Length: 100
Ligand SMILES: [Zn+2]
Image 1 (tube, rainbow, N blue to C red):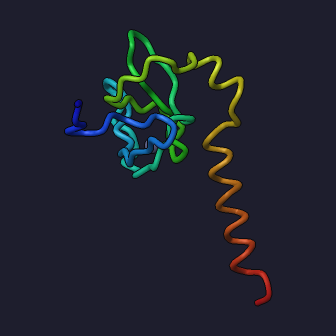
Image 2: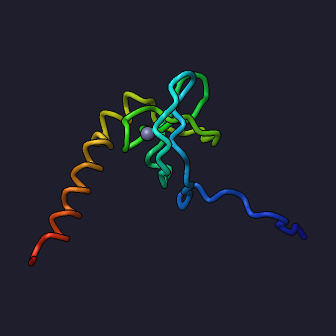
């Protein structure tokens, strides 16, 4: 009987904390971002990337998924993550100031 020595990756519940280190010669902003699979798209030659919600740059990560959308498809089906993050921050600030 087979014994699982180490469970395989559960892609549905996958998440990882990555640092924004940009791509190639772009340094990135250094933000620490928690990403889920829904944040990822296929980039160039089998690479996996996401858009940093802090600086808007592409961040390449070393995580080989085979069924990711293309960057264009991802952009067409997701709101701008940078704009989303700004709105989220505004909402959070509005909550803090409410009732003062
Ligand atoms: Zn960044």
